Length: 326
Image (tube, rainbow, N blue to C red; front, side, top):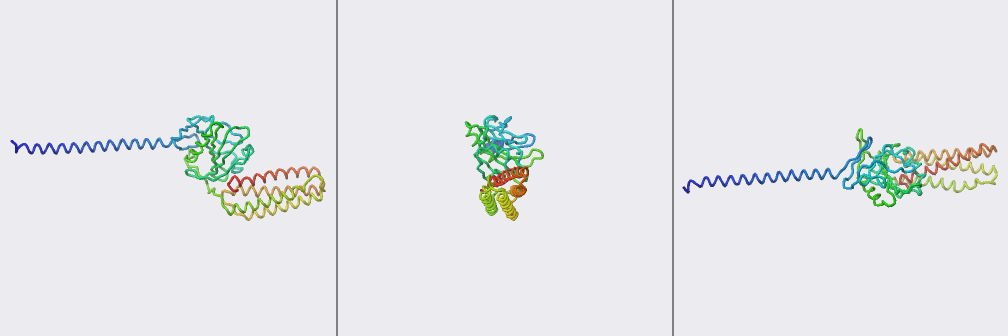
């Protein structure tokens, strides 16, 4: 009997081993599937998407920010079909606005918005997740209590995508949270979906910056020296001579600027400066002619042209500061 029982016991032992192996495999498979599923879920939770008819953004879900119905109006700053995010989906007191900036064809920042600022912005070129951008911080707008940080991404010579972080005075922590969010999100157009990036490098070129500063210093010295001589009580002949000297000096600045080769990001700004210098030159020539002719009507018209041209020249020079040339 003992001899006959041994094969049966051997088979039982083998069966137990097979069952144990199958159990181990089952546990391993279930563990893998469970872990893989949790990993996928965590991956999905790490990123969130918000979109409207023209814009899609992907951002950190852990921020707790959600799509919001609207944002407060910001004087002088407008975005076409804005996509708004806010803490918990509330954009009334603080939030982030993303979209195409209106008025960007006139300069790095819309002139109407600059006119509403209490002081010039602090400008930096910063690296976002997938693009460079201009960052304008310390923004304080007249007739508005909002604190602002503006990011702009030039996508062509005349088109710019903006990200606007805003917060009421009691929500400064939200402004900092928005700045962190802006640095890590990605933006795409919705149809067809194309990622938004700068169309050229925004990094300031040192040699070009020196050349622009030299032209600016030349113009400032010219106006600072001769402009005060155009004063009431001076003879027409003397004033006409000063106006002519100013026109000639501005013509020299136009020539100097023409010899400067701008980087792609500064082409529009340099063109605006060249045009403004030429306008100012022509206005001073017109002023000199009106003084020579003794024509009060012509003098009044020419003087208005001088004021307008000088304002345009001041704006054109400030545009370089908005490109981080200091």
